[in-house]
Image (cartoon, rainbow, N blue to C red; front, side, top):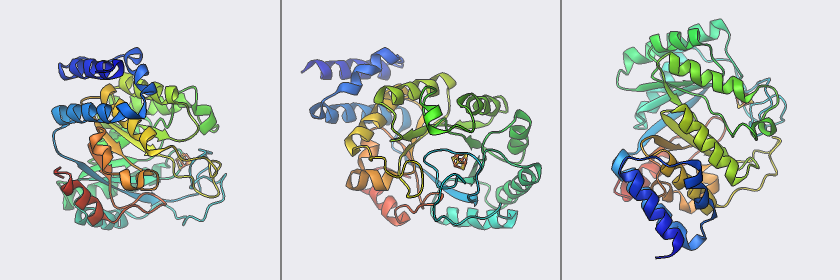
Length: 327
Ligand code: SF4
């Protein structure tokens, strides 16, 4: 067995014994040669099986307020700084939210996430969302309700929890050093503060980032360890889908193996957490999509994204079934 394989084996053994790994332990994994990646995936898979079982989480997201955002996130089709062809509309009504939750239930999703564009909400908007959450909770009590509504205060986070919210998504997008290249209209600390408010309010936190913004592999690793420090519950990983009209429209897509390697390394860093593969899965991984589970992921978004389409739901369900996994 070569040196790198011995290293992977040793780290896996420690993780399976319930121990954790440090940044320095994980760093050598970045320089694995393609020949050793299968071995990395095999071990990430065994960690997933041990701590997350054989079940795949399915989450459906809906764009409850689209476009017109005053922030300048480099990748985002909903920013006013960009010239994209997306449909824009104000916050949908609570009844509209209920209708979309019903559709999510029909796709077999067990989580439904209301997402709004913009850095934060007005008081009226927040009240409408709380009303919508109440309606959905009464009609579909088994559906877990999530939201992604931007930067939020402790008080508003508590209001959402009271209205039936189970989890809140707020991505850090990238590590602190790289963040100013992603967004200049708000800070990394503002994002981090929101995570702390959510935790204080007793909400589950879904927080991750995007690979392919131009960040280095070390910066991806740094993000992984910030998320570990914050002890978030679910880590959504997005892969850049360069949308025409955005600042990153000409970015080269990372290679599938490079992305899968990071998914596996994130499983080593976060053995017990939900790792959810989100936007850009279809475009970046193409025929390698099924590999995300072998690389250690245990959850996906189904039924499309905010302004881009995804796989047909039946195709994703078929993929999960053919791998012997359950939803
Ligand atoms: S990611 Fe959110 S805050 Fe940033 S531009 Fe898009 S909608 Fe606005």
